[in-house]
Image (cartoon, rainbow, N blue to C red; front, side, top):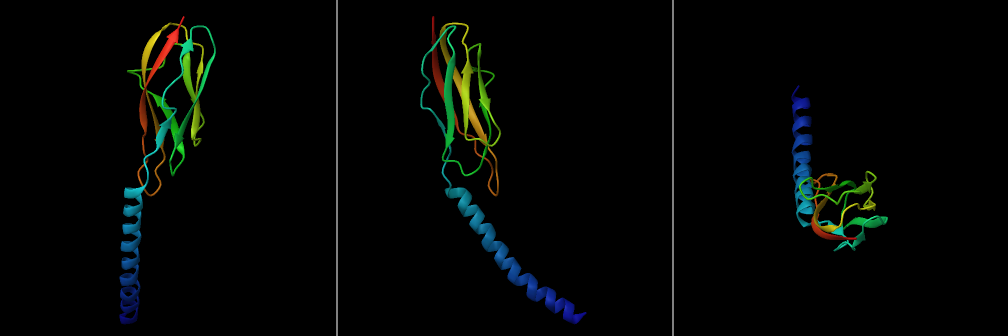
Amino acid sequence: MLRKAFFTLCLTVPLAGCEAIMFGNVVMNCAVRSEPILLPDSLPAATVGMQYNVPIEVIKTTSPVHGIYVSDKSPLPGGLQVEHQDRDSHGLITGTPVKAGVYEVHMSAGTYGTQCAGRRPSRVYRLEVME
């Protein structure tokens, strides 16, 4: 019994030190990692009735992207949507716009968390759809 208690104490104390060091490393790495960026900086104009394909990309991320999203409150114009495959760092705005106008589009992307919480870069675009 005494031998088992001694063994447990001798093993637990060093592991507690390792766990503390590992926890410190995780916290430090999470704090200093770069913020992902959603590209492009701006969207090219679109034309009603013409096919529109614009690549969207998430850069400076240390984990896979689980989605590229458009806000319900400031969506893409009718006829356009975002296509994205889970875990890819890129997607595509695609479709054929149906109505002219100037649209404010709020987009974001979500990254998976590993040891650190996932990140959510976002951007507000101005998209002009011409006749």
